[in-house]
Image (cartoon, rainbow, N blue to C red; front, top):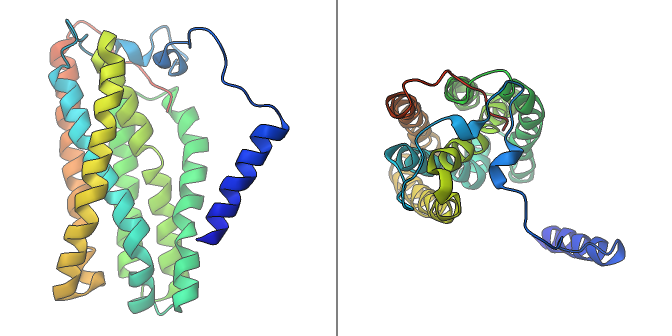
Length: 248
């Protein structure tokens, strides 16, 4: 953990050395960063919020972010235990191997940004969840360390697009209430990060971490159902719009 403190210090020193300053003037609208290669942007995905009210599609996306956040935090906190007890890795090796998820997410973000310029966001999110499920199956069932770590890389590839796509859809659905939507979005992650690992730990006390990890495919399945509902809510709210793409 001391390494993390050192890295934060390096970032602060870099900011001072290179004289990083907060830009003055009005910032560009956040949704301008989510432009597609077509004629429309993610801002055209769904219903506009009227008088600051957040639409139904936003709240579906809010719950979706909470569920996908649960997947991420459970993996961060409990993966090392599964690698140690089931895949036979040492305590140090298991802790280090968790970085495989981050490696997969790094590659997934690089490739996902390109894919999001060509695919509509809802089908792309479903595809990402499917990749996550496949990676989890490989990780959970692997009896040896290298195979479990490979599963974690695949899992990271899918997880890479969960939050970027969900938050972009949520902010687009919020329309003129995007600032309010962004504030509420932080609570969705807080709910997922605060509850899911406690529940998984409680289950692990009874059946062990490996069996308790079967909660994760349940989270992924719930996220898939929410994504399907989100797509329907967007189509109902904007039936005359054609499918569009969003950059993650």
